[in-house]
Image (cartoon, rainbow, N blue to C red):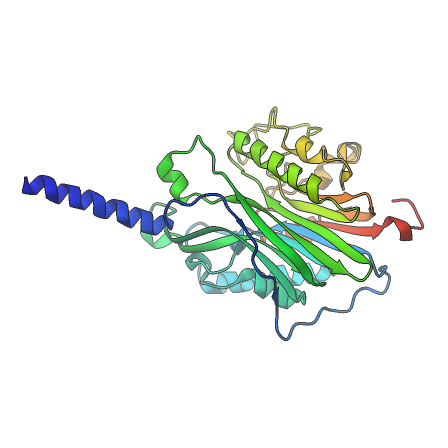
Length: 351
């Protein structure tokens, strides 16, 4: 009897430890985090040739600055990577930066708030954070223990030259096909939205990161995002992020050299988001097919597919759009996508 009681106590203790490590049984939720205005940071002067209501927007999955050889990395690695990322972002002279896979307070990246660090370097004073993965201890990679991620507080962020308001973050359900114990520690995917306050009126921003491994989950997330964008759409709207899917026009949709088991066959994720009335892809199908390789964003060292997107509302036109491969090819596993938008009413030439 004593042995049974002892075993039961050990099992309860083990369950308590696991629940503590995972931060309990977490559910999808909607939050309204405050927007941070960084003290002592003023926006850099904009490029003289840019219109006063133009926007240069960058979306970039920065992979928490971890790209390189496997295993845990020293603080110096992240310091160097963030410094270089900041230099690259500054070269684009952005007004808005949409970031995914950003660490805010994580053991794996030595507890540095990467969103704030990049915002200071790029001189974008307004920061909106979307925490989508938070736990006291993540025991991954499983071995060796010294490589464990440990304390986790990560997600996405919007960095802005202009004030941000109405910030809202929604996390979405984890894949049903994952084992329950795996989902305890698995990250939530999310979207965040905010309103950019410009002199001529508001601009709606959406930043999202959909599931990379579960097509069913990714489709569900795309529907949630499309519904919300449809409700909140303004003529001046920007939607971007890591959609983790390829365009329906893509020549290759499976059998990738880096991920041979990953497939986007019969994946309507992008079509669902493109289907929002009044929303336009900055690289629509015909433009994409003219030169597929020019738009590949993943994997950065040898790109073979486009996973990252920016879309805009009817109040804008595209001045330019590019994937700058040479500047950022070894800083993340994704390449950034850079788009210059101009308001329709001030446009004087065709895109």
